[in-house]
Length: 241
Ligand SMILES: C[S@@+](CC[C@H](N)C(=O)[O-])C[C@H]1O[C@@H](n2cnc3c(N)ncnc32)[C@H](O)[C@@H]1O
Image (cartoon, rainbow, N blue to C red):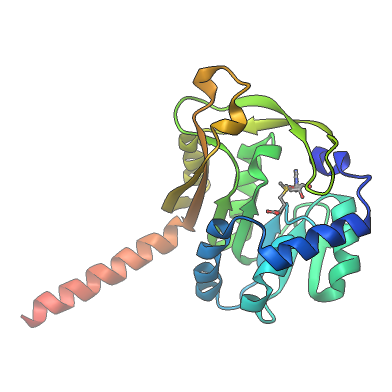
């Protein structure tokens, strides 16, 4: 299931420990990704969280102080799960496959969407498991045009040598939004946070216009209920005038 994780299979607990120490000390280099999550965690009010591609719990560790006892599940490759269990014990539930069922208030997908090649069925299963909000970040998305496939050279933070190559699917913003809409989730916030053009410089010009976005999707039924509630309040206020 996890080609990227397989490539990093030789990474040791010590390597991960060093990476973790750096993340805890300096953050994971992208506070722009984590900042919106604090508000989403507040809104989530302790409902279970599902973190797809959550590594060995790196997102969890950075967010830990906002999470309290919130149940937290990470889905990732076998090696990341092994290291995660070693580091975090029972606090986080690690699994190598998507849960078949469950009710997660908040699902997060950070730095992972590009590795999931069959992303439409994936978005549909993720949406079925999520009650309220899905947050997507740190995946290069194409600003115009259609999805395309490319090869990424993986260079881990803790070594200068390449760990190998991995096929990625660079999705277009529009296609991602359409897939979520078909799965019953509407885009409520979309912020372009970092241009990815430089990293795409070996591709033909027309494929380079990609960026990281912070995207928040909310279950459409809930969006309608909120609009109805706002409409009702407005009608009551009018009736009182
Ligand atoms: C770039 S890392 C991001 C790790 C972490 N979320 C972060 O932001 O630091 C991508 C992660 O996605 C995982 N991954 C790749 N394909 C996956 C899949 N099909 N299902 C679950 N996880 C996957 C990788 O093993 C890796 O841990």
